[in-house]
Image 1 (tube, helix red, strand yellow):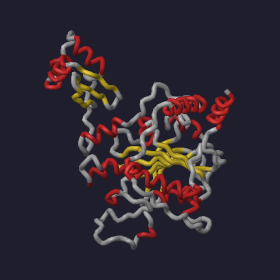
Image 2 (spheres, helix red, strand yellow):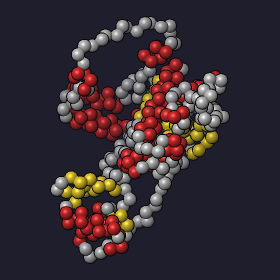
Image 3 (cartoon, helix red, strand yellow):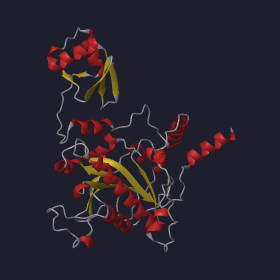
Image 4 (tube, rainbow, N blue to C red):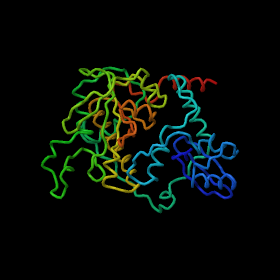
Length: 358
């Protein structure tokens, strides 16, 4: 018998809270149960199969018969709790098609809107005088200004194939090591950390990587590909799964015909190598956000529309990318393709129109 390794305890008088952060379960223990758990933590071999409390702790998953594998994390337990505890969004039922997802999503939105909205930010409360900025100047077409204005999140795509040249441009400007900056290197930069991307990276580590999800790209067979920034090349990792893309993205089936997408991952081992504290874990998401925005701006400049999400079915994505129990983990997904520019999928529009008629 062993103690579930994915627990942490919170004193909350008059009880002790035990949270199984991997399985998203929380338990309140009274003094009797807390005392017995402490005894078993000291020596799990004292488990008694006829002790009612021991049986309850086992059935709750606080105790386990399974062999506990100690996976090296590299940081402190706080970051491990945060990462594992925020994986796999708890869901009683994953939508099996776009219509079911649309109804679930609208029901969720309705429930949220029925609750009080958050208060204004503190900075808005304390502001004494607003300084209004001048209107931005109109720059020539294809300027950064117009790209920023034209970028939008779309949820309807035609499925039309994207050229390999466009994919190459997207990857090079988002995740590639820019040859144009070879001579723009500070002499103080350590060897091995001189590669430069278009987006900033914590400590110059370039901890983020990318896996291309290809459905319709001219010149590439469908599948999952790893991107190699040093060589600006792809390597085949896995064929596409039998299930549609929406199953990997928590039931968002409106995106099933997206021609190409990018799973942005983070090399945690690179980060904890330089920053041995849990705050550095935040930088993984910050860097992924930078790269996601760069990808979207490049796609927009190429005449493509974009879509992005942080709702991943983590275990399935990790398996597909070959990253199970790896220090490299998927954090985000961004994709692009030809679109009619619709922000809402047709199924949600139909549901909304039905509600309006009622």
